[in-house]
Length: 191
Length: 191
Ligand SMILES: [Fe+3]
Ligand SMILES: [Fe+3]
Ligand SMILES: [Mg+2]
Image 1 (cartoon, rainbow over the protein chains, first blue to last red):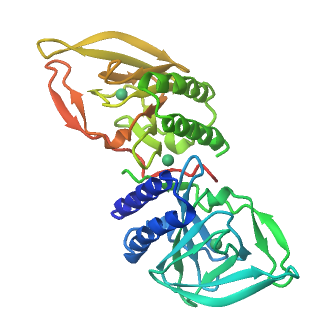
Image 2 (image 1 turned 90 degrees about the vertical axis):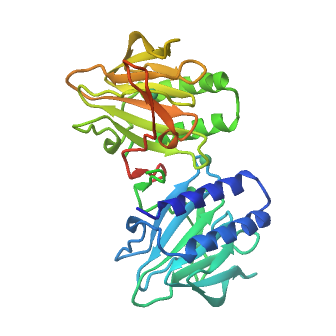
Image 3 (image 1 turned 60 degrees about the horizontal axis):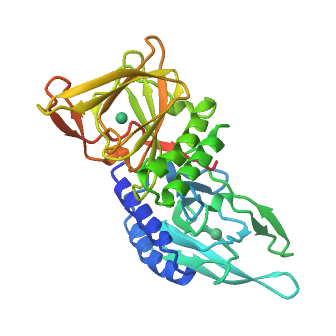
C-alpha cells in the first residue's frame, strides 16, 4: 500500500480544517483544493476500496471521525450504475478520482415535484459541492458505459449514519434511508 | 461483528476526554473507568484483532486519531511471549481483556543500569498506567503458559509512530525503535 501516506495526509488535513470550526463556506473553500490535489493523481487508493460490485454502486468508508464531525468515502460506480435521487443533510464535497460522473441536481417545486437541472459531466479531477444551503438533492451516475468510475467524498458528518432521504423522480415522494457502508474494515493509515 | 458498538462507544469516549485537553492525571482518571468497563466483558473484540502469532506478540491498531492525539491498540501475547523492556514517551493505559499478564517496571540507576521492580500479576479486568511522569519503562509478558492473553491499550499519541526506546536488561543500553502495527486494516466501527 504505497499510496497510504497520501490518504493519511489528507485525513489529517481534513481533521485540522474541521477542528477550526469555520462556517460552511470557509470550510469548503479550504477543503476543496486539498480534495482536488488528492484526486488529481490516481495512485493511492487501495484496490479493496476501488472494487465495483456487479449489482449496485459501492460506498467504502475510508475514515470517519469518532465524534461524527466528518467522514471520507470512496464511491465506486460500475457501468450503468448510479444513485437514486437523494439528499445529505450536511455539507459534502465530491472529487472525481477515476473515470467520469454525471450529476443532476433537483429543486423542489411548489406542487411537491422535483425539477431536474441540467446534467453535469464531472471529469476526472473535478470537485463539486452539495449542502442544505447550496443545494442538497442530487443523483450521481457513472458517465462511462464500459468502465468503473470512482469519486472520493468528504462530508461534514458521518454520512453512513445520517437519517436522510431518497426521492421518487416522478412524484417527489420522500423516503427515509440510512446508507451505511459497504466495507467491514478501513485502511490502517499508519502501517 | 456484534461487538463493534462497544468499541465504537469507547473510541468516542476517549475522543471526548482527549478533546477536553485536561492534564495527564485528570485525563487518566477519566479514562481508566471507561477502559475498565470495556475490558470487563470480553465479548466485543473481532477475531482478526485477537489472533496470536507463533513467533512474537502482535499489536493490532484498533483506532488512531489522525492528528496523533491518541491511539487504541489490542496487544496479543501467545504462550511464552513478552515485550522487550521499552518506554512509551506518552501516557498509556493497559486494560487486561483476556488471560493474565505479568508486568515489571524498571528504574534507571546512577550507574546507568536498570533496576527491576517486583513482578506484578495483572488479572483480567485490571487497568494499569504508564507515562514519563509516573514511570515509563516496563516489560509485559503473558502470565499464562498455555493460552493467549490480550490487553487493550490507550495512549496519548500514535504509539506505533513514536520514536522511543528498547533497553538491554543487563547493561541498560538504549536502542531507538518505532513499533509500527501488525495490521493493514482497522475495524469499520459504523457497519
Ligand atoms: Fe450525494
Ligand atoms: Fe508498554
Ligand atoms: Mg478525530
